[in-house]
Amino acid sequence: MPHHFFAMLSRMKYISRWALMRNAVNENLSEHATQVAMLAHALAVLHNRRFGGNVNAERCALLGLYHDAAECLTGDLPTPVKYYSEAVRSAYQTVEDHAAAQLLAMLPENLRADYDSLLRPAAEEEMLWCFVKAADKFSALIKCMEEAQAGNKEFAIAAESTLKSLREMQLPEAEVFLEQFLPGFALSLDEMRQREK
Image (cartoon, rainbow, N blue to C red; front, side):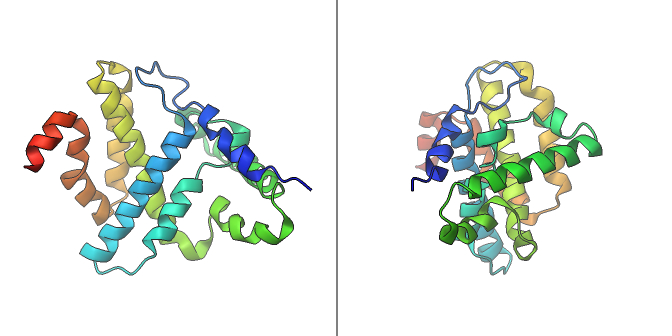
């Protein structure tokens, strides 16, 4: 019997993000998930190396990679819509849960448990999901920076609100990333090479 889980996930490349905004550079869900995975991993590594933590950074990366997988079925609902009210957020959470269940049903039954915790947050991994949420915000902030560099002012308010929400998380790992790594995203390739010498 054929199973379509991975074929469905491969369609992440067709899901556009930031649909309500004029984009100078288009971004798809696959690109976003890859970046979130890398950033979540970085935050977990910072937690372990700089703040005495002991979390599984590789698991954090995997959670980041799959964090929006349900959007293969739902599409990307813009943040202002998703968080318009608690009622809307709750209704959309129900839709996301149903989509995750549909995705899991596309796997052989003996593999479903392995992917369930990647698609639906588990309480025992709350700290890892916190890093994934911060990484998701960093990905949005980086997108805003890229749009500003392309001369697009459309993302200015989004940049401010995203930075504010990141700071409100009060994660020391996020503060380190903001200070030491985020500025590099505003540099050209030549500028990065010059500064590494």
